Image 1 (cartoon, rainbow, N blue to C red):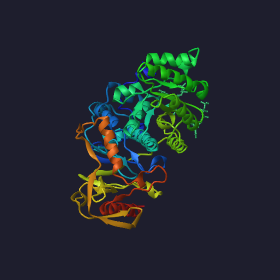
Image 2 (cartoon, rainbow, N blue to C red; image 1 turned 180 degrees about the horizontal axis):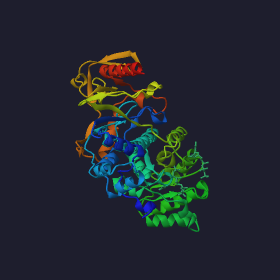
Image 3 (cartoon, rainbow, N blue to C red; image 1 turned 180 degrees about the vertical axis):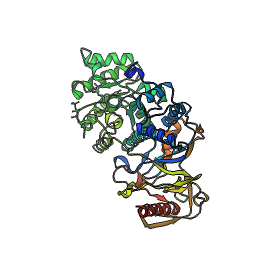
Image 4 (cartoon, rainbow, N blue to C red; image 1 turned 90 degrees about the vertical axis):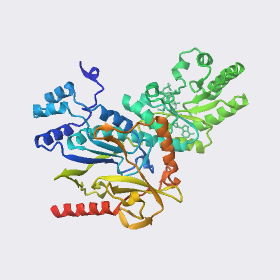
Length: 487
Ligand SMILES: Nc1ncnc2c1ncn2[C@@H]1O[C@H](COP(=O)(O)OP(=O)(O)OP(=O)(O)O)[C@@H](O)[C@H]1O
Ligand SMILES: O=P(O)(O)OC[C@H]1O[C@H](OP(=O)(O)OP(=O)(O)O)[C@H](O)[C@@H]1O
Ligand SMILES: O=C(O)c1cccnc1
């Protein structure tokens, strides 16, 4: 077999070569079983948004469960790298994920510099899974965040994901469709995504349907005959207001005479504000007040916002290319950093120093809590504390300070601390029951309700505080100093 015919479901080698090289070097030096803790976080929010919407965990769970080197993977490694010792390769045969993973559930709102996911495992395993975990979480979180922005622009309209034809290949299309649904889209046009994930599917028809008939009216009539209960007619093939809308009205009236209802018309070019207003008047004057107007054509949250400001009479939006490719920011820069390593049978916090202060990692195994003010019911800050810190769990008064400007501080005592990382794998066993997509969507909606609108607005949102416990901050300062002294 060659090329595409060889693509299998086994994603174990969906990793960078340097991970396997490091695994091998650990094996050679007898350090493969050293316990390590890595945390996944991002430093900068995409699209200038005030928050990110976590997505990708289901794919991570599926990936971790199937992790194994079969004969095929081992043979490939043998062929690729003559340095790999046979004894190493044979040890890979029995390798399974045996560690712990804790993560924010999908739909959770996340902010810069806090762990979205934490892996505690033998270092060899933790390295092996880095690339795929970043790949899944970075992409799906990016698309869910973009979708959340679109949802904000049209919170009460029907949002349809139309991106597959322009997506960065097949997996991106279906997992992107799922991510959009997590963040509040109502449907996708991708039937496979619908089948795999239970996302509602919707569709209108293409220009080719009209072009393939001798007249537009005939095309509309035949389409309505085939799908009388859910017909949406695309009215812009020839002339939207002179031909498309009048022809659609004829079909709508004839359906109405049979007790049926034309669902909608779709506009896909021209001035969508003007055309939708004109079309609305024409439909209403014909008595078709319940026929909706769908728009598509390179839409994104800014265009939708603008069209609404122009008074466009659009009820439903088909959003493709700009959503599925995250056109204005094609990647989320999530990173996976080592925060602690086993030395002399205890876990020791480690740091990564950088000349860019934003890139200095925060050492130690941390939990992250969302501090919700009990009086207002709103989130005040996220709080990173070492896993053995009792204060926050016990609800003790906390001092909150901005890690970049520690003199900016305040105290908080009347709060609920919600732990954001939940156990997903323990000792290699999956202990997390994957929620249904409906449950994920509800969780996302409840998350949004926790925040003041200032943090959520699309344009120039307030920065939501992500604070460190004094112990975490001191450890970070201590390691920075130790590193400086070492140089
Ligand atoms: N009223 C409006 N205000 C702002 N932008 C609009 C408005 N109406 C449409 N747009 C957007 O302007 C862009 C260009 O629209 P236009 O109709 O020129 O597209 P087009 O694809 O070139 O049309 P056609 O398919 O006829 O070639 C699209 O992204 C469209 O969504
Ligand atoms: O603009 P997007 O946000 O990416 O939305 C998807 C686009 O895909 C279709 O166009 P296409 O020209 O591919 O096919 P068509 O002949 O059916 O219009 C559809 O008409 C939309 O314009
Ligand atoms: O159903 C539609 O109208 C549709 C689906 C995919 C892409 N463009 C349009």
